[in-house]
Image 1 (cartoon, one colour):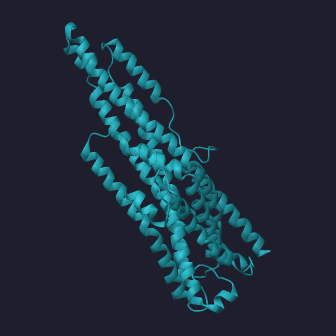
Image 2 (spheres, helix red, strand yellow; image 1 turned 90 degrees about the horizontal axis):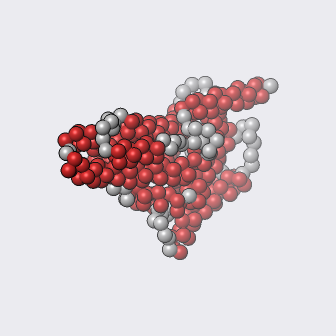
Image 3 (cartoon, rainbow, N blue to C red; image 1 turned 60 degrees about the horizontal axis):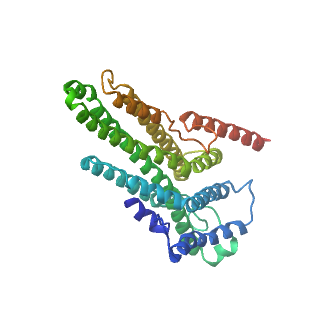
Length: 370
């Protein structure tokens, strides 16, 4: 609920069915920012001197990619959230603890865009001041008309796009944390419930064997239903977010190179350099955190499979053994998160991208020296 309410702040509703007003508002708000994009494109470009403008325009383009992907995948994401809300969790204490963690994560992601934009404005004010703008320049006629108006447009545009950019990551982080918590909860229940199957059978006499099997059948159904929920949810997460991961990695390779090229122009560390490093650290943290949580979900799903194998089933009811084999077979279906269905998402892939960015940087610096 917290995720839905905070994302809807900019008109991006996560309800499954939207009325006409919500559909119009969904696309109207981002289209308004097209005014700023047009103003940026109308200025005179000199890429040899305007590295700063090129940097912020690249950030703008990256944010716009997220804006459109979010709206294209909106209905699928809404169905995914409904699926996670229907997950049958009986432990109220675990559920409340998990909801508290998710609320904190979403609030942190909401707070980052104003902080980032504010730090950029402070860095600009302390380094340059009047006659310039914090996030690149704008057409000369707009600057001559009103510099303050241009400043307000920039602040509103980048705050909105920053919110849209980060809330997509915030939604994914929240979903991954919930999946990891649900896998841990199911793994614990599988060990506690199914682990005593042999003891139950040994304590049951022949006359009560059917009663014991009925009890174990309920336990197996309890585990199987929840495992199916989580398997379906992980597949939906992969379908919703894999293209975004691919675009994020490609964009990171470009932005990493541009920021390092911009930093190479500074002879000493100043406020602007610190701000650029902050932007770079935010992008790296988002991607590394995303990768870490995906690996955690895969690890927890594998632990659930291992917990099935660790059950002492020798001597138990044959019906229980057959049901346990079916559980093992279902759990063997791999839980994978990919980079646009091209490669598995891992820290090694991110390191490869950063190495490629440094290669781009060396090439650009050689061209510049010539």
